[in-house]
Each structure stands twice: as C-alpha cells, then as structure tokens.
Image 1: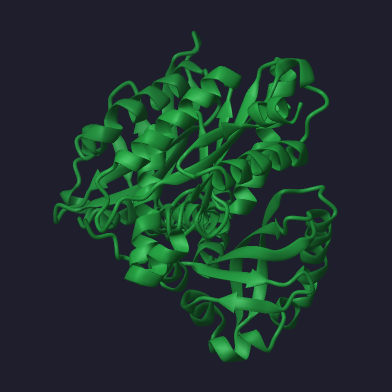
Image 2: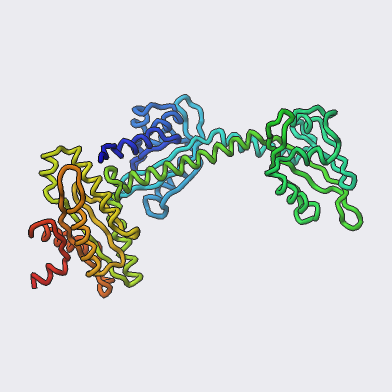
Length: 447
C-alpha cells in the first residue's frame, strides 16, 4: 500500500490556483501571502504586493470602515466580516471587491494573521447600477425606448404591443398576433405556473403590482429573461379587472451576472473550506492538528461540565519510531504515520476526536467515556495496532489514558488532563512499551 501523495501540495495548489483572491495579512496590514488570482485582480506581481499593505491600495473613502471592522476582529467583537470596498488597480483604475476577513489567533490567543478572500465584483456593481437605472426608467416612462409595452383588454383578450416588445423576441410587430396568447405560448414551461399565479393574485387585488421574472422563447429558439411589470388600471363596477398595462424589460445580461455571482459564491465557499483545513487539519494525516485539538479539548470539557458527564483523553506514541525512520527513511516514516492515522480513525467512534499533536504522537478525545470504558478502548487499540499487517515491519504503540470524572466536573481543566495523560503515557513507555496505562493505575501504585 502506497500513500506517498503529499497533502501539502494539494492545499498549496488550492491556495495558489483558487478562482478568487486569497491572502494572509499581518495584524498591521502587510501582505504575508497572496495567490495568483489576487495578483490578477490588483495588477501587481506577488513580489510587488508583498512590499505593500492593504492600506496602500484601498480607496481612502473605504479605508476607515475596513479598519474599524479589523479593530472589532482584534477586540473579539466579531468572528469575521464581509464588505464591499474599492482597490486601486496598479494601472490606476478602481476595482470593486467583495472582501471576507477572519482572524487566526495563536495558541495563546494572540492575533496571528488575517485570512482574506477577495472576489472581483466590478462587473456585478456595474450591473447593479445598470439595474437601478433601468428600474428608474421603468417607473418614469412606460414608453421608454428600451422597454416593450403591452396594453391588455382583459375581457376580450386583445393586447396592443409596441415595436420594441416584438423586436425583443426577434419579430417584427406585424408578425405578432394581438392576443394574450402571443405572450402565454412563449413563456418557458418551467416558469409558466408561477407566472400565472402571480398574475392571478394581482387580478384578484391581492397584490398591488404584477411583477414577474420569467423566460420567453425568442424567434430563433433561444430563451430570453424578461422583467414583466404591470398594473390593472381599470375595473368595472363590481371590481372585476377590465384593463391592464405593463412593460417588458430584457434582463438576460443581468441573469448571466447573477449566475456568475452564484458560481463565484460557491467557489468562495470551497475556498473557505480549504482555508479551514489549512488552519485546523494536519496536512500529512488529515487529522486535527495540535491547535485544533487544544480548542476541541476545551470545548469538550465545557460540554462535559454542562451535561455532568465523564470525559476521557488518550495519548499514544509510536514505539521506536526514530529507529524506524533511520532504517527505512523519512518518506516511509511519513507513510507509516498516515497508515496509523487511518487505523486510529477507523477504530474510534464518530463522536471521538483524533489528532496528531507531535511528530509521532497522537491524541484522542473520548466524550462521555468513563474509566473502565476508556481503559478497554485503549487496550483494544494497542492490540489492534500490534496485530495490524504493516508494510515493512510490525510496530507497537504506548498509550496513556486519563478520565475527568463527573464528580470533578468543575475542577478539571485541559492542563490537568494533559498533565495526567502525559504521565500515563510516560509510564507505559518506561515500563516495557506496547501497553496502555490509565492515570488511575499510577495513582494506586504511588499510594
């Protein structure tokens, strides 16, 4: 079995070749790492950006808001923030971006660096401006040059369309039958039911304005998106609708922008997941790293305190790992660590938390596990590893175990558990190795 692919390469490629800009930024604003997409967005090379700070390329009108959000992150008032702001491109042009920022702290809780995702939304901003302008034109003048208009006699079904309405669909006005069916038969089947329901609600008087976004079939067979808005302007003496007028606006380009934004948002989600893995996952074994393990241990202790449940902690170390590396080489040693991580992950419950916390040292958090159960888990794991068909030669592990009992729920913190499990691991290694020792057993021997 060969596991020689390097996860570091995978994560580095995910960072460098992401479709959106990604960067690590110092608490002072200096670029620490930037990817290719960010360089393309700003027009700077990687070397040029690393000599600058984000303040250097941020539009002055947007800087104070950005700095205020950063202050709130540093003060712990926010976990992350997102805002739209402007960068100056190297060529002097303004680039609109969607910026998402979170703060990575070190093990002592001190600010380490900001994680930033930068999405170029210049086209989106321009499209939104165009949309607002189009909406204003629609409200100001139904007979605007870019709008198709319709005037519907509801009792007879007769509709008067303007020339723009016909051209929007690739027809001359003479080719369009002046009946409501000219519109109905061209509505996309997937949009027809919802559009009819919106129109019916307006005709009943349930909603003041009829407004629908739907697709119409063009003369050449493709579909265009339209914003269809209208209103009943005449009712009879009993309130039945008699006449309605409205407009069609071609919004196909806007829909394309929206689809692009959806795709970019999905790419942003994937990038966030990859960054989370970079921050919390050991790249060699795909288990939690030490930082993530420490945070999870504190969380599980707090949960055990709230629920008045026991909690066990297991730490294991590969016996004679240095000799293994010296004999077979470090690449094979890395493969052994990966294989052991797989064996460990397959031997524990879904609720347990496994981590690689050192070179050949692993740890497992066992929620809701008492002394006897924790001892059984550790002894079974010890036997499983010793009996596993390893590639080059058999290996064994030494295991230390400790348990935070229910009656100690408010007096035990992570440092106490780590100290006790470390002592139990040391006992196993100094008393023959290939064994599991619970800290309670050491207490009895010492007594």
